[in-house]
Amino acid sequence: MHIFNHKIRVRYAECDQMGFVHHSVYAVYFEEARTESLRGIGITYKEFEDSGIIMPVRSLNITFKKAALYDDLLDIQVTLHQPEGIRCLFEYETRNQNNELLNTATMELFFARKADLRPMKLPAELLNKF
Amino acid sequence: MHIFNHKIRVRYAECDQMGFVHHSVYAVYFEEARTESLRGIGITYKEFEDSGIIMPVRSLNITFKKAALYDDLLDIQVTLHQPEGIRCLFEYETRNQNNELLNTATMELFFARKADLRPMKLPAELLNKF
Amino acid sequence: MHIFNHKIRVRYAECDQMGFVHHSVYAVYFEEARTESLRGIGITYKEFEDSGIIMPVRSLNITFKKAALYDDLLDIQVTLHQPEGIRCLFEYETRNQNNELLNTATMELFFARKADLRPMKLPAELLNKF
Amino acid sequence: MHIFNHKIRVRYAECDQMGFVHHSVYAVYFEEARTESLRGIGITYKEFEDSGIIMPVRSLNITFKKAALYDDLLDIQVTLHQPEGIRCLFEYETRNQNNELLNTATMELFFARKADLRPMKLPAELLNKF
Image (tube, rainbow over all chains, first blue to last red; front, side, top):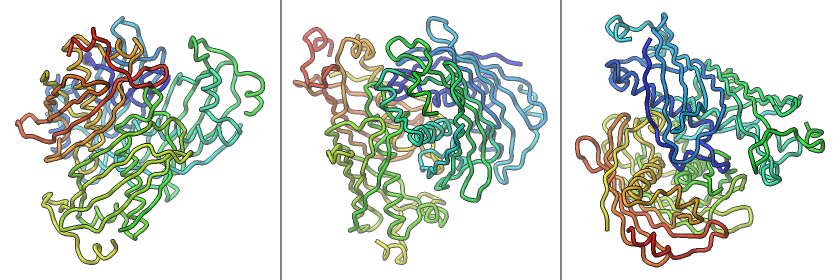
């Protein structure tokens, strides 16, 4: 299990007319944070995908407590769990610059061959990086 | 309880380099479908918001079974449940033009006063439309 | 030269905290309108791309006169010009439900082979559809 | 005239099925780069807007030379020109990590009162920061 923190500055285009980050945007933030956390353990997702493995999302659950606002500097905490078989669980917590917890989320991804989308286990050399 | 169906054509910009609709986009599709389902029971969300009530999202849960592809003509089925107190539950099922079930989701929203974001119950005249 | 009109309902997520459709979104609207206008002359862009031809954007120019608002029902008028060599020009005009002109745009695309991104002329059978 | 450089890492969700950053996304990148360049001269756009002034976009022109790809680390160069009356011109150049020029753009914005969207000149204290 690894825990990473990644900062994201909220863009103007990501806020809706309530002045809040639109709820759809967090999946994009989580993806950026997940990519950077993987980079932190030596996996560049781009190379990963170039090597013929993709990671489609199996499920996404977000619980919102408070909205993020334009220009907020968010801290996204990612918890990477050890993959189990074809699956890999990520947990997220989003906080703003005042350390207020904005939302929590879990996302389950799985490993699949890019060529035919067949689910697959991660090769040992990649698995060992987790 | 009301059930509505809404068609959405997948846009090019909504697909990622796997050729799939990006998982973040479904929250936007669900919102469009929800808006149209509310219009179907006589509630224009724009007027709703102009009258001083907003509906922030409390939680979002999506389970993905199969990806939507560019130019797919999706059918989003929305189930509107009767609001309970300040909360309102929506369920979604997305199917493609081959009637394959792509994903299912639940979303919990709540009613709040726009002025101060205070949770509130829906006025009777609006509640009666559900 | 062909002229098509396509209706798009503004989504909540597409509006920023000024309450306006974010200026980046029009390129997505134009793409949807262009796709539907091509469908109108018998070209499904998806099949087009599956056949090994892509149409990257070469330039985009938009002049904004008035903002579109949430829930507006926009009319996008697309003018398809006859391709000249590898290039193809599209013009757009966006109006709202009150027939107010919101913006005008021109977009130049070119035809390229998907395999190696090499610019190419359109095969005669496709060119004849314009 | 000020020149700023801002780095942006391309997100997965921003790439289309050609594997390219979708052309609509550059307007979002330019906005982020513009915000950071204004921060560099002591103007926080959030405070600016909170003080009752907004900056709608008047025109946007982009010329694309080469596509950005997933995970590219882009360098966006912003040239801020001295505002003239109600208008303000920004120029952009996007390069990738190999210093290849991907696109160039100009964007004209204007200053307006948030309350009634009336065009206005910038107060001297803000104008002096340019």
